[in-house]
Image 1 (cartoon, rainbow, N blue to C red):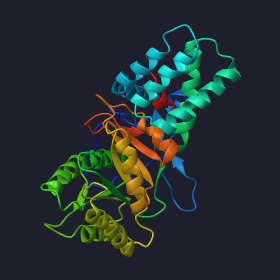
Image 2 (image 1 turned 180 degrees about the vertical axis):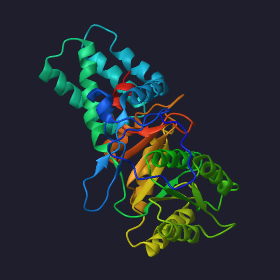
Image 3 (image 1 turned 90 degrees about the horizontal axis):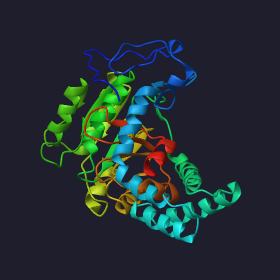
Length: 358
């Protein structure tokens, strides 16, 4: 969605009277039609002052929505097929149940959606399958809406974000994308290379730091908790808005490594008693119900504050967000549909429901 943003000096404080336009100069929002601007990206909060959302140009958001629809096309097509007939009967509901389960929505969320759908169809007296589909879109949107939440930056300085996830979920790549997302909106970011277990992890994060023109704190073979502590101290002394802590990927069943995450959380709080302010779990959108299991396990261990869902392209089913909303409604701050820096965007329940249902 956003063009590459490079600067040598710390980014300036965002002007609330300006809108950032991808691959263009800034323009005053009052020069655009009201329908061209929407809220809901990253909120910068200054104590004692009103909070302002950074506006987004809808044309760019539309492009993003098209990529999301493309990523979920297979699932959307399977569900849309259910509504190609002319009758509303038990066969339709049975086919829909199968399609939702195959989309990784899970048994509980599927049962909830079907019960809600039957009620909506009765209340609206829908007689056409496409009207039933519209009711399903409304029901799924309502289920997913609690997952919408704006990421707040600035209530603490620096805002410390601890990023966790299993190997292969796209954690370090997501940190690179998130760094760009925040920097583009005027936040100064410091990266902490606390993944000292994986070979070349520090170097990989260093590449993202270079691409985003931000600073990085790392140690050769250092203790992950010590690196995290040093980064928080450095972030405060350098006046950074955000410190992003990269941690080693691990499965929830690897208890000794999960204990290492708990240690990082404890040590970070010694540098700042209120930190970490965000604990973000990166999950692969292709892993289905296993993603829900990861959310539950990491939440129990670390008290998650938000999710980043990656790889919602190709074979992604996406229905697992319905399962998460039903069983562990932790906010989804961002979703990604590819490897490019700009392919990370804020989660919108209605957009996602429409893309998932074709």
